[in-house]
Amino acid sequence: MTDDSPPLQTVQRAFEILDVLKEEKEAGVTALSRHLDLPKSTVHDYLRTLRSMGYVINDDGTYRLGLQVLELGGQVRYRNRLYHVAKPELERLVEKTGELASINVEERGEFVILHTEYGSKSLNLGIYPGLRLPIHTQAGGKVMFAHVDESTVESILDRHGLEAQTDHTITDYDDLAAELETIRERGYAVDWNEQVVGMGVVAAPVRVGDQLLGSVGLVCPTDSLRDGEYRDELVAEVQKSANIISVNYQYSP
Image 1 (cartoon, rainbow, N blue to C red):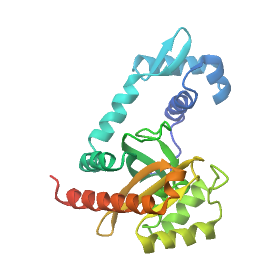
Image 2 (cartoon, rainbow, N blue to C red):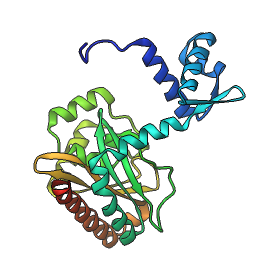
Image 3 (cartoon, helix red, strand yellow):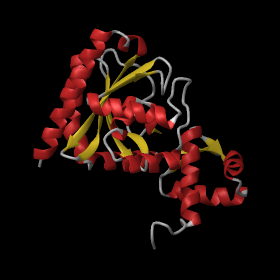
Image 4 (cartoon, helix red, strand yellow):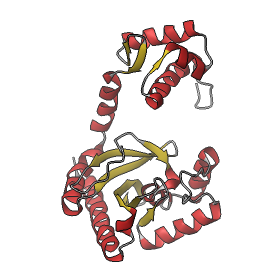
C-alpha cells in the first residue's frame, strides 16, 4: 500500500471520533452521530471498542478521552531526542526570563509544541505539549518556514492555506514571503497578536548544519514585546538557547 492509497474507513472513523472528543471535551452518542453523520448504532459500536481499549471513558452516557491517550502521547515525547536535549535548556530559559518557553517542531505541515516550561511571569493561555497550530500564525512556526526550501513552503500552504486566526495574521503569500526573507536575514522571528490578541512570540531556529530540527520560542504579553530593550533581551536569550540545544543535540548520546 502506498501513501496515496485511501485510508481504511473504519480506522479513519475511529480517529475522527477521538478528534471530536478532543475538540468538544465530551459528547454523547447523539452529538457524535450528528458530528460525523453516522447512525447512532455505528457510533456506539466504535465507542464500545475504543472504551474497551481505554481510549475513551463513558460517564453515564457522556464520553471523553481516556488517559490511555495521554500515555501514548507521553511515550512519543519521551522517546524524542530533541525533547531530552531541549528540556534543561528551556528550564534555564524560563528561570532567566520568567516567560513561557517551548520547543517546537513541524509535522505534516503544522506547528506542533513538543514541550513547554512555565516561568514566574508566564501567560496562562492553555498552551500544552501536542498543541497544533497553523504554522504561519506565529513566530515559532514562521522561523521554521524561513529555513526550509520554497517548494516545501508552497506545498504546505497549498494544503493548509493562510487562514486568519486574528485580524493581525498574515494571509497574503507575498507578505509572508517578505517576512520570511527578513527572518532569514535576522536569524530570529518576532511577532504579536497574530495567533492570539495580546500574545507575542520571539523564536529562533534549532539547526544542525542544514538540518532543521525545530524552533525555540518565548511567549509573552504583546505590550512587553513593544519594549525594544526587553525585546532585544528575549531575542538574545532565545538565540542562545537555540544554539545550546543545537550543539548538545549533536553530541548527546
